[in-house]
Each structure stands twice: as C-alpha cells, then as structure tokens.
Length: 81
Image (tube, rainbow, N blue to C red; front, side, top):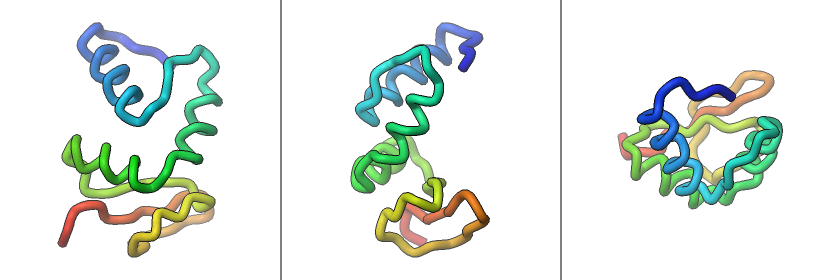
C-alpha cells in the first residue's frame, strides 16, 4: 500500500481505526482482518461515510440482500432503496 498525500493518509488511518484495524506493514493483514469483521461494523462504518454498497469476498455473509456476485466478490446495498 502506498499513500501519496498527508490528507489521504490521515483519512485512510481514520477509516481503518473506525473499522478497528490497526496499521501494519504487511498488506495481506488488511484483507485477512477485513474478511473477519462483524457485519454490523462494516455496515455502520459504510453508513457513517455515506457508502451505498458493501463489497465483500464471497466467504463473508452480512445477512443482507445480495445484489450481485461473481466468483470472488459479492455486493450488498447498505442504504435503503
């Protein structure tokens, strides 16, 4: 992962902390942690930042209506239609 501006770095750090993810150098760490976050946290953080959709690996099941799925990822709607 590379960060090219201070503003972006601060925002990225803020969002990772909101998810409960601590900074690490090993980028594989983020994917492993993200895949195991509770659905409520993903939805809460997504809603807080104004996200309309949640994109997760197929192994993650947030208990929401599935909108789209390919062999690796699934898309769910966070905000009400």
